[in-house]
View 1 (cartoon, rainbow, N blue to C red):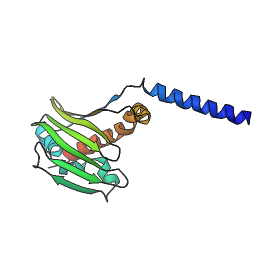
View 2: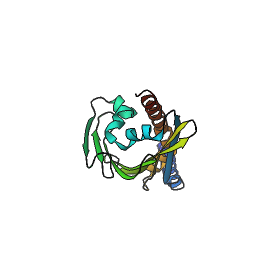
View 3: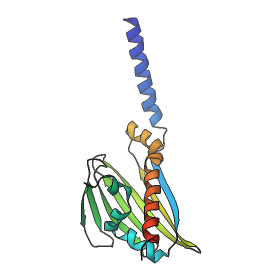
Amino acid sequence: MGALKKLLSLVGIVIVMLVATSFIIPKDYVVERSITIDAQPDDVYPFLVDLKAWQKWGVWFKRDPQMVLSYSGPDRAIGMRSEWISDKEGSGEMEITELVHNKRVVYKLYFPELEMGSTGSVVIKALDDGTQVTWRDEGIVDNNPINRYFVLFIDGLIGPDFELGLENLKTLVENQG
């Protein structure tokens, strides 16, 4: 019986330490990836400003062909929204909040199941040898210890999807026309 009490005390101490330590972990996160595409900004921008076109290059859509998608608001403009429901990839909402023609698309993401949101952007920069596309997502988590630990792993979870999505975008843009 004494060993069980010691074990339970040890487990309790570990849990308290994990919770206390979580408050040291930053609440904010940034995930960012870039790629150079052999094309002009005006060849890239249409695939970014039209949320319907994201299906052609976004990895999440390819992973779940059964994903239910809906769109609302003005096409290719501030206020355009997409919503998706997916058993495999989760459900979410995305809305364009800022546009600079051939330079930047800014959007808000919200995942109702996680009660978590973020701000994303795709920035387009003309280079001598093509166009640099930088995809960035940033957000702040609440004080839930699990969410705070999630921040430590978010780059490793989302970053590879950004890389693959950008590779898909590069292939799509470079092979059009």
